[in-house]
Every structure is written in C-alpha cells, then in structure tokens.
Image (cartoon, rainbow, N blue to C red; front, side):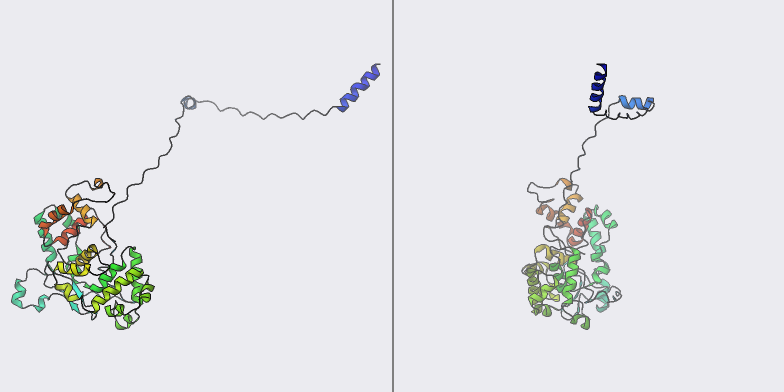
Length: 365
C-alpha cells in the first residue's frame, strides 16, 4: 500500500513543470549622505519655470519718402563702359566760380558734346568785378551755414558735427550730366542700390561705341534710336524703358538742355520735368538739389525731412503716427512756415534736417 502511494507521488512530481529560476534582486545603491545644504534644497519647493514670452517685434520704421526713395545714382556719374579696367583720372583742383543760390551751381556737362556748362570762373571775370564778387563756389556753403545759425542758433551743433559735402567747393566742382542723372533716377525707382548699379552698368554696355569714343554715358540720340527690346536687355521693365526713351527724345530735340537747367527759374524746371513720364515731384526735387546743386529746394513730401523737423523742435517722433497707418510728423503748412526764414538756403536746411534723426541719404548723394 505504501509502495503504491509513493509511486503515485513520484509520478505526479515528474508531471509538474520545473519551478522558474529565482529573480536576482538588484543591489540598492547607498543613498548619499544628506547634508544641510541638500536638506534645505529638498525642503524648499522649486519654482516652476515660467513660459518664455517672445518679445514683440518693434514697429517698422517709416519709409524714407512716400515715393521710391532709392535715387542712389542721381549724383553719381558713370565710370565708363568697362569700369573694372578703367583707371580713374585724378580730380582737378576745384575752380572757384561765381555762385548764386537762386540758380544751379553745379558744373554741368552737355549730354551730346560733354561741354562744360557752368558759371564763369573768377579768372574769366574782369578784375574790378572779381574784387566785389562776394558769393562764389568757395564760400557759398559758409554763407548758407552762417545764415542758418543766424535764423536759429540751435543749428550750430548740427553744422559743427556734419560737413555738407553736396554744396562744398569739391561737391560743386563735380561734373554732372543732367541726362545721366535723370536716367539714373528712373533706373533706381523701386529697386535696391546694388540692383540699380547693375542695371545701369548693363544699360551702358548696350552701347559698345562708348569705350572707343571715351564717353561714359550714351547720348540721348543713341538711346532714342535704340529699339525697346534692346533697352530691356539691361534689366529694365517695359515701363522704365519707355520712360528713359521718352526722356532721351526730349533731350535729343532740345526741349530739355543743360543750358536750360543752369539758368531757368526753379518753378519752370519743376513744371517742365513733371510733364515727363516717369518723373514725380519728389524725384524732380532730389534732382534739383543733388544734381543741379540748387540751394533753395525744399521737399515737404519727404518723410525724412518731416521726421527731422519734428524732432528738431522737440516732438517725440516715435509717437507721431495717425490712425490710418500712414506716417505723418508735421503738417505741410507748418513745415513751410518753419522753413521760410531759411530762404534762400532751404536745400542746406533740408540736408541738416535729414541729419537730426540720422536719416540715411547716401542713396541720394
């Protein structure tokens, strides 16, 4: 009996599955000794990190002008058909000429002949008249600055800090081709300065005879006689090509001329140029100031001038913005009234108003 029971127990034991292997327990690391410093850290609840708030982007500054402001090449003459291999000639000493704030004081070039058209030099004036000639290209800027300080002594720190090269003896000695300056203004509209320079170079390269003739910019008759699709190969839009060709025709027919720009009253210059397609009032004002070197130009529509004038009289220009989202710093009537005492040197006054807020006008000079 006992033998049968032992046999049954042995058989049941053989039928049962083997027990699972024992699980090895990991060794617990000994906790580091708790110091006074770590105890305080454990007791003090940690402050949850605040969500980072991205700083708001500052409002975009106002545009330099309400019209295309990139007129970089207006007062910058071309260097020739192939500037990379052209050795620039040394600049001659500035010739002292008679000057008048009411007319152009620039040394202008005839677009067709490159003949100099400018006021007489003192050497060409009779000795008796030369002795009494009080206003010349050598001293007209000083006369203008003295007048500005006399009208408002607050102008003196600005004048002492910044040299107005545009109307300095060296600035007035630079030769300016009015046709080239106006073409450059049209080319520069609504494009960057680098793009304008590249387009102007390609425009000059359209006329390969320039290098042989020693010319630096095509004559109006050459541009007027060139097909529109050829002009467009320089990178000009259809409209700009039409503007430049229309301008060239007016020079070719002598409706516009260097002599006209030198002697005509300012109002007549503005009226004649505004009638040309592609030239607005602001473009004409900048041409008169930076190319013709007229000393009594004043642009009420230039927002850089508006901003500078407002800051000059103590307004917080960062808060002067109307509800329509348009930048307006001063009313036109207030600007005109403020600038009136600075006649006949409002161009110089305007130049210094750009400097009040450090408006970048290198693209205009």
